[in-house]
Length: 247
Image (cartoon, rainbow, N blue to C red):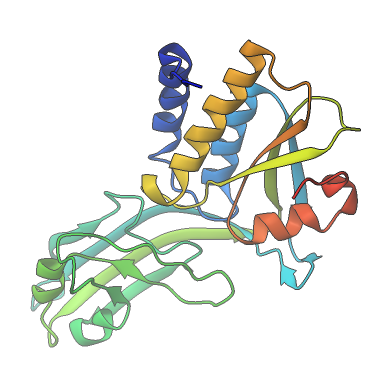
């Protein structure tokens, strides 16, 4: 059987993923909430919410988080600001769920909070700090090497953590009393396509395709988008959600 891509549906799905791609998406907070709202507005469905501090199986839901700004400046000898060397120019700059920090520290101390990829010197790294009160900034190798141990640097990381919820998006096709096929995708990795959003793209396409071609009569299909791995734990913590599971 030959399968041909429906180009119109694919282009629609790709447009949505391109809208989600630049969002600063940690496992909970403004970025991922906006991404899930975009999915819901596009294909309908339901948003499940799991409150901060609650336990889902053996995982605890962390605070919601938002990063507003980042600025690292090198200081002159007299303490005045010289040059901003690192700014909030990319979603991977600040590790997900980093704490706020504002102060002046030495280059030697600053380096303890920087992440650099030796194997990929021109790339930034995805890091996360969900359950610790710490901060990390991702830099390129040349940026790291430009920092002088004995110089002073002004660091301003403007983030906030607050009580809220972790969210999961579910779109159901078919009747709930039939064997259920689950199609999972995670949406929490900022500025990454192969690790995350390619699954969202595939699910969007399949959902739209099945609806248009009306091919969902034999099974129930549940399309899920959530933060990896805690989102799947949260969803599966309610047995009703996985009723009639098909493995």
